[in-house]
Length: 382
Image (cartoon, rainbow, N blue to C red; front, side, top):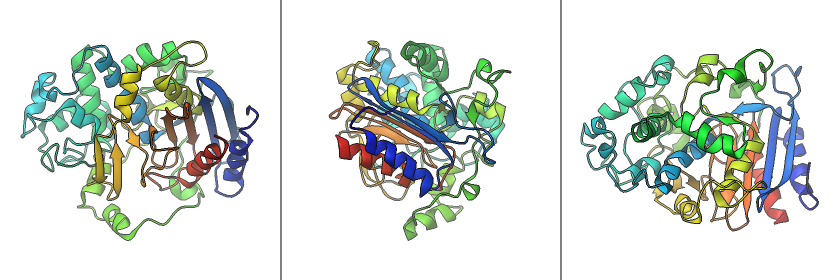
């Protein structure tokens, strides 16, 4: 469905299949709490046999981070978590290795200085709920915490999950399900429940295909960026290799694990509704953030050269902000892209909640051309 006036978004969505190589995808938009775009198309498998349907869900990689960040912010909103307190006040073991002064706010804004590990974890270790928190607690920072920022691509999982566990006694995925997803009525999980993977639901989640087989047009990275990704010793490469080798994103064990940095599973509709509820009231009266918390999410905490992504980035409290590396709708926007194409964000000035998911993954980390085509079309009608 497309509300009158938003047809350019539909046109851009169609063009993504015709020109930019999308295979299976969905996009949804909320405006002022009301759904105005809800589109899906293509196939959810590589051989084109199974159509992408209304309720097809997708692994959204780092777009998970924006949804996960709502949990500590909600705890802060309720007075249970002080963003200006040392992480060690909640998690004493974290103080090891010169990390005594790292604040909760630093974790959310990628300023903690621990985007990588001295030894990458196996997929099983990454998912066991113990090895990851233990590794980041023991890790010495790669720079003096608080003096700069660098994208915590994988370690963000264990930093946030253990902090939430120490504060609430519940996992981040559990708090997300009980306090946000279920009340809001959205299909989004960090830790896919057994009920969603049992007989009768098998195949709802579209499989992830590697970029080499996706056939998506790619933008050419700048030389210094490509060199950083190619160098095994670089902080860039090490940050993305904190899980080594990379896990099979289609494996049931991976989907069932709780990795708030990377393995969220949901629909575009869920992402758009979630972000709409961070900045206002959605159709049935649900809301996640107060205006003060929404402003906190969007307030710049980190800006400038990113020590991991090797480009200039901006972060709020858990959210990537509008900038050259992640051109969202406007400077007021906050959200998060997912490596390979997914994108979700809110724009409080325009009253927009936006979600786009795809299974034709490209090699882009930010600013995927398909997502940006949809954002440009949306901008043209506002």
